[in-house]
Length: 324
Image 1 (cartoon, one colour):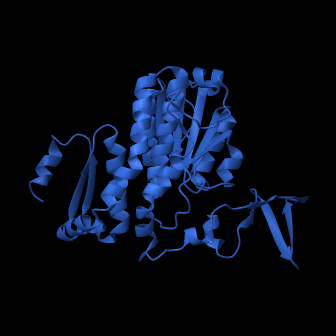
Image 2 (image 1 turned 45 degrees about the vertical axis):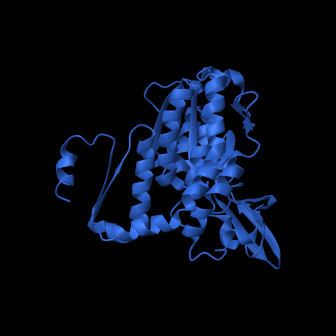
Image 3 (image 1 turned 90 degrees about the vertical axis):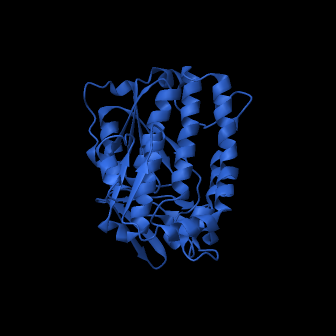
């Protein structure tokens, strides 16, 4: 579902709509939708083919872990205004709508869902607004909500996740305003929502998301500050402090990556462990959930063990720890 699959061959692409059928004949592309002949634009992908190669690393996941500092610098580039203590996101929503929002609903799957959980908590702190994060396949718009005071946000790296697209279409059908947080220009979700925030992480080939999770969380943090400033939920001084902290994150990640040998030593020490507990509280909960998912997906033997994530470890799970 991603243009990175053919970057080595071409940087031009035509995106088809649902129900489109394309025929390539003698160098000409003809597209039909039902009985109608339709025209679809040819667009240029800005990513270079080299970005979709391993670049000397043994596998894509390791490469993309090491790309996190540069990815986050790109995510933040041009988006921080310290003098105004806000984020510059160039969204087209009217200020009156942003001030009238009563609820922000996040819909997402997998790693993107954990980024959405993080954003939901941050927005309640900074944005002075009720939030929810729902696994996209379980999303239903209802419960007496006012669609005209609701913003539904789809978080999807590829912009093509089927369940997330179905969820955002349900929200639109109900009359809610919509926004996407994605990595992929021209993807289906960008053509269906009112506004889009790109995370600017660059191509991610590895199945297990790494740098895109970091860029999603960072982009959503910027959105939280932006909305908080519009709605008066966060002071200029607090917003400026958080923005300055965000500017320091790429360097902090680089410092962690520079200690890779220590990480390898720790991994070797615990490689035969059967069970791992990832513990977090508040904003640490979605990070713990994402850590558990990464370990499970990158080490398939974990099927024999158990992964537990909880923000409250003072009850029955402690009894389990004593037997590990």
